[in-house]
Amino acid sequence: MTSPTKGAPSPATDGGRERTWTIREIADEFGVTTRTVRYYEDVGLISPERQGTARIFHRRDRTRLALVLRGKRLGLPLDEIATIINLYDAPRGRRSQLEYLLAQIEQRRVDLEQRRRDIEDTLTELAAVEQGCREDLANL
Image 1 (cartoon, helix red, strand yellow):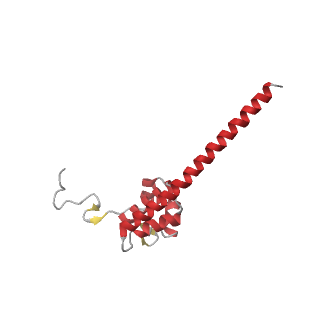
Image 2 (cartoon, rainbow, N blue to C red):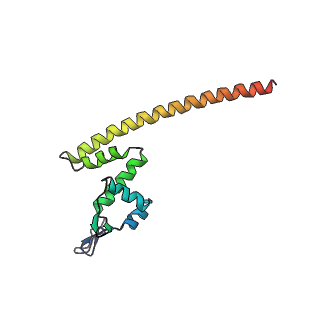
Image 3 (cartoon, rainbow, N blue to C red):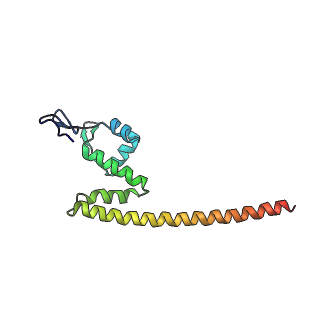
């Protein structure tokens, strides 16, 4: 692995300035609407810099949005996602964030496993009712 050339801007910078994104760039990158991005701002999950009416997204906002969307894919409610993200800034930082996230994952797993059992039970019942209907129909 080679090291970057001394003095050259890193990928996270633009000529020595921190890389920023517009709301359109952020929305396109994550495959969400600008309305969704604004909603996450309204509920306090991200806080882009404002220059007049324009929103300027920094690396922190981009990272937080990625975490919000990952949490949504896991089925976590926004208030839980906010807690997890905000724990990173807490005194115990990453440790408390990870411990809390593990607890949430366990709860989510238990819930999903119960739902799977419920679905399997329902499918078994449907199969039995279907078989009974088919036998009754054959006897008519």
